[in-house]
Amino acid sequence: MTERRCDVVVVGAGPAGSALANSCHALGLDVVVVDPRGSKAWSSTYGTWVDDLDGRSDSDQLKKALRVAWPQVRVVGASERLLERAYGFFDNEKLRTHLQVVPVHPSTVEEVVRDRESNGFVIRCADSTRIWTRLVVDSGGSRSSLLARHRHRDGGVQSAYGVVTRSAPSQYRNCFTLMDWSVEHRDPTFLYTVDFGDGSVLLEETSLFRKTPLDPRVLERRLIERVGDVPREDVEHVEIPMGWGLPSLSHMVVGFGAAAGYVHPVTGYSVAASLRASDRVAEAIQRSISMDVAVEERVRHVWDAVWPANLRRTRALHQYGLVSLARFDGSDVKEFFDTFFSLPTSDWSAYLRIDTPPSTIARVMTKFFARMPWRISVKVMTANPLLLIR
Image (cartoon, rainbow, N blue to C red; front, top):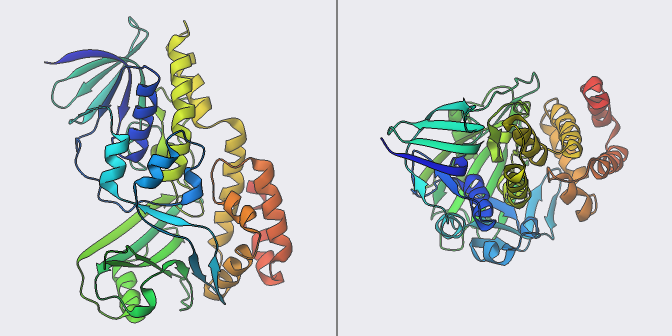
């Protein structure tokens, strides 16, 4: 049996967990990262608005880790427009190399036990390793099992079916399409396309939000109807839980990243939000460990940095937007996004971040509401008034 002691254990070595471990390490904390995949390559596609990387001390290095960045973004609703805001996609190996400065212990966490003698925790791993630590952070993603989670009646899932091909139709080359709603369905889906600049193009049919995932066979069929049955180098099927309640903020294991609910309730974005929050949360971890307090207070202090009260209010406003979207049919959703992206870039950009102050989100929503067609405004007003009041 291997035993060791440290300041903090981060469970999960994806971008969020690696970023937090990196920030903690930079502050001089002794960090152990545990992940059954070890240091294996990340398989997901991670995208971000380029300016969402600003504010970190390593923003220049993060931007250098982008595989490709498009200065304009194409969106298609009832009309087509180009958004003058750069969007990029990470080179996973460059991003992992930059963030993963703390070695990863390749094992599964089987049990986290409160240890009153050390005023901390004992972690038991599947390989018989035991780790004594002052704090445990779960950054294992939306489906991680270490946190107590609240079920939310308005929760659902975003689902997508995509192919990577070198035979994409010409209209999907030399561009990035964030969403194309031009083909209407009663159960609306949109096309998402990325030219990676190396000859390969991702073509993906996406269901923005449903109570249950849309059948991948339906998504595949719709994709073929749009772009043809192109030769496939790779296939991906994505399901992202969206709109579920936050994990219990009194739980003794602290959450971070998607595990903590950092997935934007309306868009599914999460990577940039985790990168921006890692320094803030690491500083709270350092302060909490330096305090001579009971472990309960230490944990509470860190949870307050993961989800400050003002950002929980922002979350509630975003949740209302998601509930509204769930009521729209194909024509509604076209007009909804036409109106949304007709707002000033600073307004819709602010709405797409989970860490925008709630007063700003409320102002943007009010301005957006005033521009909506009446029939859509009625659906928004009657979506769930009690949620908005809360």
